[in-house]
Image 1 (cartoon, rainbow, N blue to C red):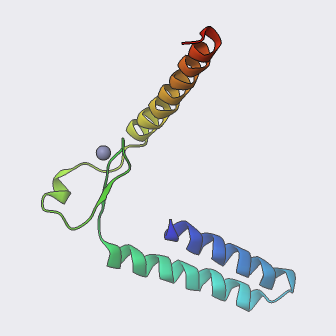
Image 2 (cartoon, rainbow, N blue to C red; image 1 turned 135 degrees about the vertical axis):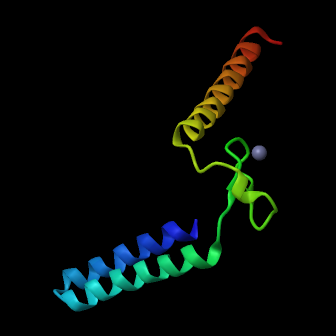
Image 3 (tube, rainbow, N blue to C red; image 1 turned 180 degrees about the vertical axis):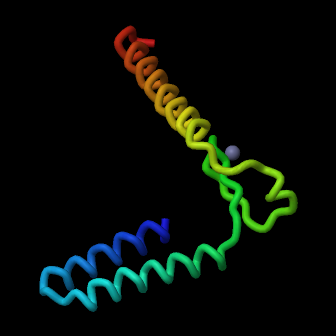
Length: 100
Ligand SMILES: [Zn+2]
């Protein structure tokens, strides 16, 4: 997640400048990190991200035929993963209690 790291780094560094009352450096860091983010947005291109296994595909033919990111579908798969892990843990606990 390098994109999030850039945002967090910009926030931390600009906060330090803000603490020392250096507003020009504060805004300079924020604009610089925003500029880096914009440049990466145009350089990196689109990515196809699997909701289930988190696989990422770049530069494959037919990439544009897939729909955009859907938060509802993402959340459905994310919660299903947790429910399956919880059910497996519950089964393991039951099996150890009954001696299976
Ligand atoms: Zn997958």
